[in-house]
Length: 350
Image (cartoon, one colour):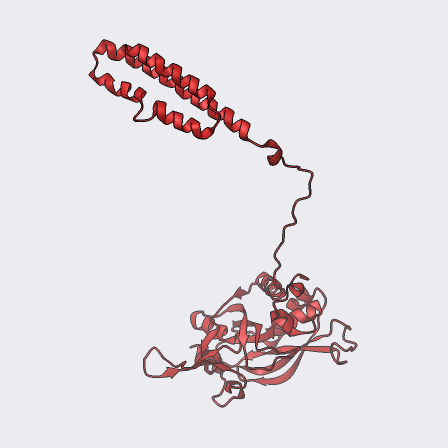
């Protein structure tokens, strides 16, 4: 009796599966014939109440029929999927030109900074970094800048409002500034390291300046610092010549002019020969044959004392140059404001 019932279920299932034309209907038929509440599943559940001989006979037949029905479902689904697949719509013409990918560009200041870092690391220098929001001690005091120095005035420095904080001993309050030079990194580095060492410190700085073609309130510098027991002006000039020759890919002459900075003694204004005219004189160098880059000098011993070094035990040189100025010279850019304009037409040239 059960054998006939199973055979009848098989006949009806295979007939309905063969006639179906929709994948959705296939799913409904699967539930009807093989679902948990289907008649076929009910027969399989009743096996436990049969005798051993019946269980063996009916069980083998039922499993065989179930496999046939499942195979029929799989084949029907495959057939319907192939019929519904639109090969023409999915066809790809591999000879058609692909869409042009938009590539990003490094900002010229990033290119300059990476190039400077590569040159100095090849000469054995480390790269140091520090905070842009700085304390008065690191930005001024430790650099031997007097309390009444003009650089501390509101005309030159961005002071943070309500910026006083307690020092470690909770006795004295300290003012906070947007750093005006990356020399603060030198102080922080020297506090944690013992000479000899050589570092550069590239970074962004801030000053209350009127904006024009050669000045901006936010710009970039990189400091160089080399400290040991026998560092001289000769070391400063040699390292500078090596760097600028590699940076500009040309032989560069260095000129040091006496000057004054609180954190160096002796101090120099730093010039290189004009690379546009070769030192003969042109509009780029204002017919002087030389281009001024920034300040340099031998580190003042007061700075070494501020970081805990014994006085007169170490000597070192330091300089600070503007990245924008170097980029303007290298790429012949005539307006410093272009670097922060956000104009992609400018950035894409690099």
